[in-house]
Length: 211
Image (cartoon, rainbow, N blue to C red):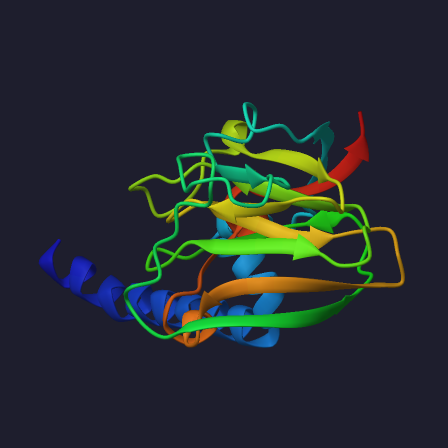
């Protein structure tokens, strides 16, 4: 019996070695993408799935409905004393930068949303042009909640001040281009520009639609 078992061991080892060689050749001959899909189907699905498009109704902006995200500033009578209706600015963490930026038309879809946590930002259009902005309220989390994202239609006779940390996507508009006055810090886009990719994180792209 002992001799019989001993004679079978090399034969079984050869079979195992042959099996491993075949498996190795099988995986080596497959493309990396196919290997990923077979070995890690969930990861492959996340990488190759097409983001779903979710409609986001454009709300006409008012001081009340925009309060979770910032302030709406409209014209006031000359000589009016400063009060809580004026823009409550936080610009003491660097050199303020007030400039005019020209943006080109890029549709109404967005999948990236950004926040600045070191300064408030003010945006308004020139020439009375209407524009759109996607927003989510400030939070301690590293990403916005999908259900908290809203979109606003902003007329050209006011500007908005965003709270510290307000997530925002835009400006967007239907014109070929729009010039905006922009108040932030000189290095906001360098050291204070935190962006969340909603497409990668949630598999969602938003499109702003007329309500």
